[in-house]
Image (cartoon, rainbow, N blue to C red):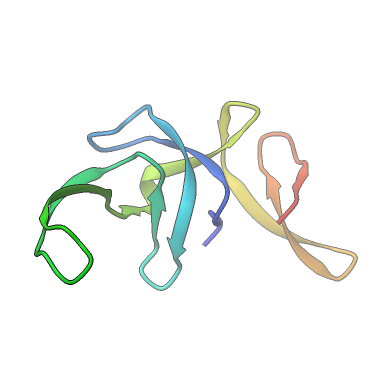
Length: 100
């Protein structure tokens, strides 16, 4: 999966199309990411010891195919290549390597 935690991404499909945010969690096995402030859902929480119950808003995961990496506020596709024996991500638009 080319999108990692800490990346700034643009949502390109779904109810939050056009919104930008930072990836807070990634789940490579499921090809899903959680983005700060995107895909908010209501969750009913049962009260427990030390925690109040009620309805809580939280971020739900979004499929990685519905987001694009942002490089200088421009959405770009990413690829992998080897440089000096190391696998690095690079922008397919500018060809620049990205710090992973």
